[in-house]
Image 1 (cartoon, rainbow, N blue to C red):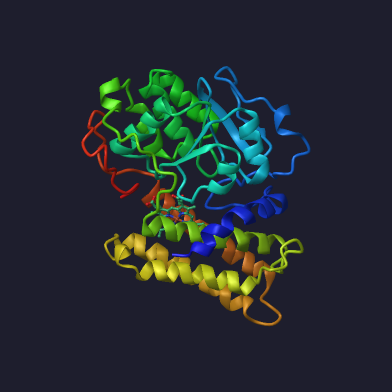
Image 2: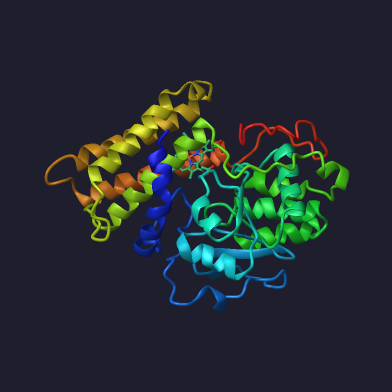
Length: 350
Ligand code: HEC
């Protein structure tokens, strides 16, 4: 829906993290760390499977090992993130996040990027086989990431580890808890719980061609744009509903308007028409709160900060509520041994 939003995300993240990471709440997930840690990448060794707590390194957060030289963690941010990956000898990065990978920095670091996005509700067997094959066949060390490195990358890494016989189901589920995968991501836990050792012949059914960019479907794309504007609005809130000192190009009312717009366009899109009434109602509620923020920020001087913050909180509640009911649980049954369609995976989420 908005390519600028996608492109913008990378450059913004560094700024956002340095300023508001301690308190930003994007759809209930904790934010990423500052990328300006005063240590050099080489000083932070990668975790091993014996490390029982997640580690942070410059440009990376929440890194947990799921196998020999296979790690799960947050999106590598900026030069620092790729410098750390390079210092760890990482050859392949696999993103399971919806956002477009930072191919420029990866190429500059000589690292291959593979983009196989999954949903918060888990993934189907075609995607599972692709992920397992990628980790089995591509050069290691391998770094698997989503956005925060807690839920989706952990679910993918745990399922892969069981499928390749590196971890028992119990150990893999325990690793997900180490990564901090929230219990309400039932679909991700189900993927790991239902995983089993796969034969080479089964894994070979997945295509060996791994895309470096996978275009998100309309809803995911809209959500990524919504998430970007939401992040920027959060930074504006931190600055007392004013232009943040360290990001003077932000226009508060414009960000609220963009958020309201993304939500309105999404609500009017054909794929939303097929969703249940409860889903459309929540989307409408989310949209009307964003609209209210826009209205308050359009006055001069702009509205009462306490009221703006109350609306912002109500808005975040709609994100959470919808995700809990519509995003985080996979309703379709999962057939663990099914391999049909492995060469042509369907869209990431229903
Ligand atoms: C009416 C329901 C609804 C509302 C409201 C909603 N979302 Fe979502 N969101 C979804 C669904 C469904 C998905 C999963 C899409 C998929 O995987 O196909 C999703 C996915 C996402 C994702 C993940 C994109 C990826 O990388 O795959 C982010 C980030 C996100 N939403 C942020 C937000 C934020 C921030 C808000 C509030 C300002 C919000 N959403 C409000 C339904 C909603």
